[in-house]
Image (tube, rainbow, N blue to C red; front, side):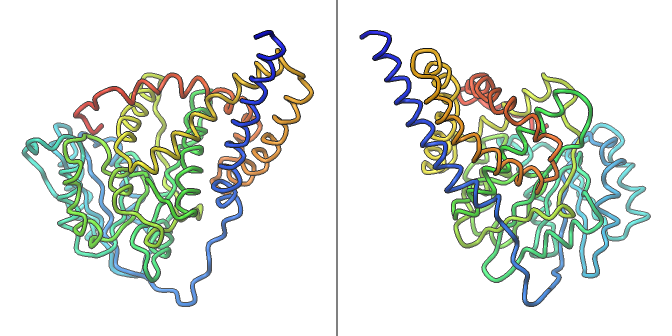
Length: 373
């Protein structure tokens, strides 16, 4: 086979991969770009139980817990903090907060759960302790983006809705690492929001997630994946969510904000922990996410091969079709999620996803570590 024939095959493969990518952008991501939440005919507020699990999080709780305690919310609510065997000043800090805020309830865990590594046991205890049906989950290192977080998140509940997926953003800081972390967070959110809008919800993030107690008990909590340290958010949603019981909330007042990992090693550890759970998703979700990732991974290598070994004009035309579609969807999506400052970088980050996939693909083969932090 000569270079001309090789060039043709590279170009045909590039066209096929581009077609797959365009399908995902049109069928899935376009839904998020043009999504508008429907106004409710009758506005109703529900009692809410906020649940936060903490282990040696005194510094984060001192900084972030007041954001959950001073919410503007006219209906009955409570904030439950599960102190999971902390060795720092968490216990004494929470006692001080309790004196000032009557809605704060503290659950002290003094023994490790046998054979249940990670966060699932303390979170289960918090859920069983909760007084109210609607649960609103976040982490100790997260702070609500506004005083209306609780109100906005519970407002998504209407007839048939049992799960609400929120957006857990990261604080904007200087440096390339911060931009990469926020871009990856946006890309993940674009996928799980879009899939939910297409009737195929597959995950949520524990930084900002809500569901009803009845859903938790109906699915016997985390018993189906108790031995896996991670997955208290995405694996549970993957199991419990369906096309009719899940909604999304992208109101900026309903966001949470977290401190991003401070260095590359910390971020790598965080992402490896997340990707170690994705192999337990439902087969249909693994297939669809795998096809998207595989096509994205091959896109730029095949583009390069087509430019070198085939007619570069045709290769650029095919590239341009995806680029224009991508540019429109990313612009709208980044604006909706408050990440518009990343837009000038989107092509750079899109190319960089090749190396991202290559690096983190090994995480699928790694055994998850028992720590939940």
